[in-house]
Image (cartoon, rainbow, N blue to C red; front, side):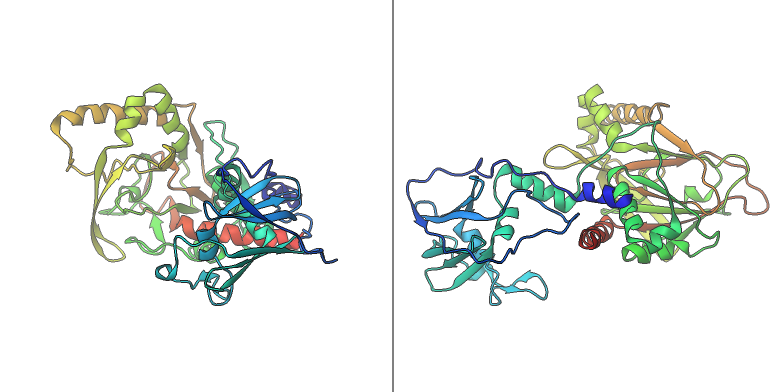
Length: 441
């Protein structure tokens, strides 16, 4: 059944027209097409990623003298424009590109940024050949060029394919996906479903792990490797005497993200329940991206304060080794488009040092309090209680998590093992799994 789901997730939208961003040119040289061969180079297997469902056959290619471009007219009538300097920079010949490493060899200092095309030809409707003024030649496949079309739509679709930006917001109505830990370890389709849901929704619960330490190491190997921090490759969450972290107590933990004291906090957190308290100890999560957008709608000024003010964080102690850490983070990180990309908030490690003018302090607290009130609203937070053998996996850049207090005693009443991973590692594995699935269908 997941095959069908994977096919749907892997399918990308059809280009309607790649000519929207074409620049105006005054003249061009049309190139006649050589007779096509009988070979079909571009058949796709069922379920494979097909960025463009239309034919990638080229009708005509021409070099445009005025602006140093190559224009391609596709078989369906749409057009794409490629700068000559970009084509030369991305020559795929062995002298310019190391195919074993999939890396560019051509040095930028050797590139003529004002280069033009001496000659361009087309063969089999599938390959473009370019001769440059210095007699160097480049060959480009039609499908390769089609995927790299510079139209706004084509660029957006390529970014979607590369980074999987789809995000599903949620509140107390979260439908928490439960998956078998063993299936994720041994089935590529299950692992793909796990990581793609983790990327889209931000949280997945794995069940059926052994109730002993070390299971998270297996999960780390499944994606690649775990993130080492000052608390070790894995760490034990239990009530400890003279605790060096508030998580190592039995008290309530308010909503927070882990490790904002690091300039690059871990992207993913794993928590494995080895032993659970009989009473209390419930886990709570909230969608920080959703709440940030709510705050922006409700109070744009508060959003602006939290997305622009640098807040000091600190953490000092001894664990895996001794450490003294300091950082400055915005509570709400946004990208160049103004989209929320990361939440950095941990009340326990927010420093007493606050490097802003005195008159800006109270407005900051007011904005932060409004954000916290939204996090704690019953309609926004989701509560669940882990059972021994459960492993919750979640996006530490997006979700804020907390814990209700529990009764501790002479013996350990609640024990979780924790670990981190970076989004770079997770996204790498997700792309690899997607490729495996598409090649198997």
